Length: 623
Image (cartoon, rainbow, N blue to C red; front, side):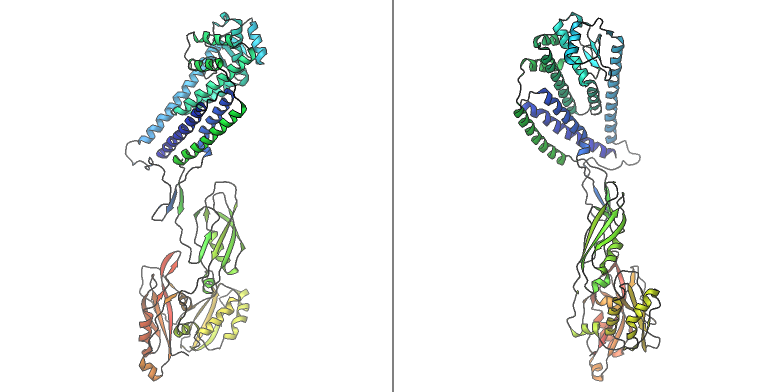
């Protein structure tokens, strides 16, 4: 992960440099001279720069598994993946270690400064007796601190029990200069600048490699010193003696500054502080308001451009490639999906052209999995398919407490792929040509609660001449009881009568019919998955049909009947093989020639194409 960390660190550094530089240059361009507002502004700008990784949106690459392409944002030019075993240490890791070592060194330097301050404090001598200038300064500032004489420059340290260290040359200064110096340090103590400055130094140590942070902290410290200078002059009404004190202390040899403390004097700020005190010009509130509003607008535009140009990149989200929904099904998941199972169109609903909109409400766990689901509205025939699918979905979540999402699934009932346009197709679908008698209807495989209700619906069909039209009537009757019933039919051993067996199917949908024979033909095995599907179901998937040619010899002889063929349908929907199950010898040849030219819609299971074995009935001379 070193390349990703370094890439984000470099982008964050670039973001801070652009925003901080623009934020520091704009007040100079607008000639703002108001230390109090500038100090607040610098602190706000520093907080924004430090918190940028938390307040900006991160890009999360989306990796799609099992798909030819990846719909993901790139993670940056430096993201090259994990190093090869045995290779040299990548330079990304080396750079990260250097940055960490620099931060550790700066923190150690800060610790040395604190230790040195403590040494100054231990060696300092309390100022006794307390001069009148010190008492006057305490009364003016309403501040309290222990005043000591030390070999350091003027400095205030401590939070709960502040201490003011004054240089050894302090007693030699005039009373007004002494009062100004002590006022300055007591104001720092009253404002608790010690703690603020320590926090600023920690930020400087951690972000030592970013020059914009150094510049911003320097401007913050200058604004703080100018605020205190302005307050000292207001309290003492002695501008000139205070300026003389600044210059007098500046003439002394300064010690190395290792302390994170608000110093009375810093040489690099002295010119700016004196210049402000000499040319103090108050600014109106209206001008300040307009200036800062303009700065905020420019910074917002610069920030938006910077974050869009240098986005931070988080961990990748892995998403499984989704199997396409069936034709006529469109899904609005109501949230970001990591994985979902395609919603099936129940075969019976599709066959009967039942459509509509199903609305489901899902309860998600913290990890995004579906804990519970309920159907809010939608056709009864479509609800089970939606529930079966949504319970296997997985959403992208933020790890918060469980919440709900609403899923909308639209089912558009498909039109017949190739509606019957000739009498031959009508004969296949609704032929009343009889093939024996419906000798028995077996409801035994059904659960007991269903047996009685189903038998009442279908018992009247027992003993009637068996035909495709009769099967349609049985289908409608069963549909009124339960939409999960499967009907299997076939001839008895002597081929004189038909039998029906009713049972509950493993899939969603209305009654599905399939035919079996005493000895069905077994096609040669194949590496491609193969399923057996009922003839009536496959009729609904017929795309192209060629009418068989009625042989002149059979027509002249008055031969009529139906040829039953076992058909193997390839994965692309074409007829791969045909075998004769029953039929008159004069009719078999034309039936095979016609069926071999038929084309079906491909059949898929779970999005994967499969071969289909079915039976086809080709009638000749039907009325």
